[in-house]
Amino acid sequence: MNADSSDRLDLGDSDPDDLATHDENDAVPDGRSLTLRTDSDRGQSLAEQAAMLYYRMTWRMPMHRLRLSGKLPLRLLAVPIDPVEGDRVQGTAVRAGHFLFRGLKKNHKNIDFADLKLPPQFEDYVHRFLWLRDLDTAASRDQAMPVAEKLMEQWLDANGTKIRQPAWRPDNCGWRLLIWASHAPLILSSNDLIYRSKLLNNIARTARHLDRTADKATSSLGRLVAWSGVVAASLLLPEGRVRQIVGEAGLEKAMGEFFFADGGSVSRSPLNQMDAVILLSMLKQVYLARKLDAPGFLEQALNKAVPPLTALTHFDGTMGSWQGGGATAAEQVAQVVEASGVRARPLRQTRDWGYQRVSSGRSVLILDAAPPPIARLSVAGCASTLAFEFSNGDCRIIGNCGGAGLVGATIPAALARGLRTTAAHSTLCIADSNSTSILPDGKLGRGVGAVELFRRDVENATRLEANHDGYVRRFGLLHKRLLLLRSDGLELRGEDMLIPDGRKLRRKKQDVAFALRFHLGPEIESDLISDGKGVLLRLKDGNLWQFRSTSSEITLEESVWIDGMGIPHEVTQMVISGSVGRGGGATGWLLKHMG
Image (cartoon, rainbow, N blue to C red; front, top):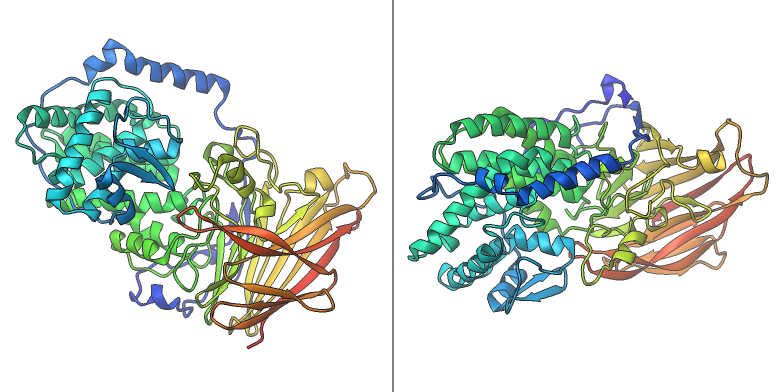
């Protein structure tokens, strides 16, 4: 992406109250920027997939098992603190005899850890031992130890000596090693010496496995997790100096692949960003447990990763719904930030992370002003370019459906696919098609290749002007969006334009239909005004807002909003429909506080 140096922001530390008050005294400089997407990327080729499959098959060979053998450690050199609390509900479920994950249950009785037959994310939850954190949060040590040790023995019997997917996938190994170390009192306090030896031996085998597989993880987040596991093992197991040198070099490289220069993740996913902050915070605690200083690149990465994350929070601290994430609760976001130890202002304007934030009074506006992630990174990527969210106080007025990355009992795979579409976001959609295509294998295909943004402060307002080329190839039209938020936050003006690209058009001369969607937040009552061009909005805090269209009539339709727990809520969407010819057209609208 090309941008003027004036676009850069000062990310220095600020007063802790800044995160709560969203102070806007640090002005955002004016500037124009262009963000490009590598459209030629189509994910792993068949040859690469075949090579990776063969590589994983080698895990089962005697040579790999031989490489994992070695000296048995007698103990861990330290027990780091887990800076993040677990989920009490899920922890209580573990103590009661079953795993609970996003509404799905798996009973411990007769459980086969070698073949769980669960959705992939649920299996990862089990194999990463994240349930151990939940159990530790929900029960006393005396209550939790018997449960933890029994499940640990069952897992070791099934997976301790057999190296296979998904239990031994590098990212699962990295998370598991960090969780085991942080909650060692629950699993390593037994007087059974055979059990202790078996577990300590498996920790050492996991470290040796990561030594050889960390760089083979299939995602940038996976490599970041795996190399963090290598570094943690070097600090927690004896004779780890060489492993530490290699591990820190691999970790620094993985950070360069995972983070943009502005601190946001290359996947543009707030879920991945939160995972990365938690991961690096846990690794930092390993250094502290050994009374060592964390390397400078680790501290720098944490300092840069938190401001982009908090940039997606609304005035009440809840997370916006972007790139597969749901509306994560304010308490959970605050806990992640506190775990990092970083206190910095939310990043207002980002060059690569791609989200624009405007905070005025008690209102927050967030705009997706960058292309979606490339194919290799789009596990739950969304065609959300130029979508926006808008909140006032504790009320999210305009939002996106969200939740595509939270598959579980309440969000089946078919619904998750729908939540990734352009129509599931508050933006413009032409002919019921996505601005970036979603391929049958779940990856993102062709579409938005470039987003041009211009931001500046005008008299008593902030102006965002952006356009994308996602519909140029099919319809010869650029989508341009103009947003103007008044300085008191009580009026948001917008205009959506479809502009001829100027190239040779591939479509016929007939008009094409468009739909401009505004998904309302939860607990908002909406009533059409008699002329059909306005909607009266009653918020849960008693405030009254009005939405008006300057041209076409508005219809109210059903929609869905996914909270941070992956639970759908019925909401309403306002839709402005119309059609444009080859010459394009424009639709203006206004959202205003009425009292």
